[in-house]
Length: 297
Image (cartoon, rainbow, N blue to C red; front, side):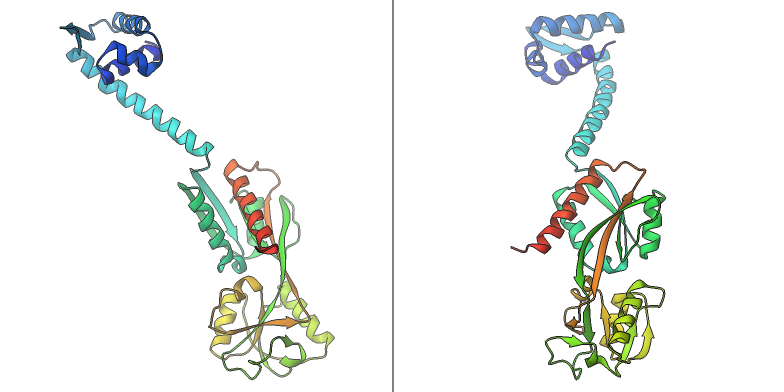
């Protein structure tokens, strides 16, 4: 049996006539007749009988059709999946992300990307920058988003954007009426800091040392969102990354800090693994969003 014979048989079963089946297959009537005759010879039994110019399937043909249809549905499902993959409407994207970008910015972008590509699923993991880079290097995810990172073997690093860090204060703080906050303004304030192992902590400490401003360390925490919670409960003030600061709403007071401390965001991909079409499309989408941030309107 040949596929073309089965296609002709299925078409006749669906359309109930040689003429209509020929139209469905975009071939001539004699071609369909010949394909049916060849199939009958191959299977060894009659498939159709003609009564009063109408074509009726035999009982054997009905049984055969059930199997043929099951097979064709499977093929059509595969073809449909292929079309979805080609149009980027099917597939899974595994994304690892540093907490700073996971607070709001990246989920918003992913949600918009998924709305454009219905059928795509995303596996989203949140880890520190070092672990994210290691996951990408070990091919445990398709793409990673990081902060203040340095290159490491096995990954390609691309800087997405930089933005100045923000000062956050409890509601009703004595500095609430200031348009911006300086290092000198925070002299003597209880300060919620990142851990010493983070580059961000080092940069902030060096700036305050440069201006000879002393703060009172009240809490150490590695997550900006949790630092913001401490600030909201009056445990102190802090300087955090802008992506998280922009999500805080009215939980705390957010003010520009001077002199500015730039916070870097980057994306890492594998040096060895070839990116899928879906991953490439997502990265291009992210770059478009970053460009729109740089040139609003």
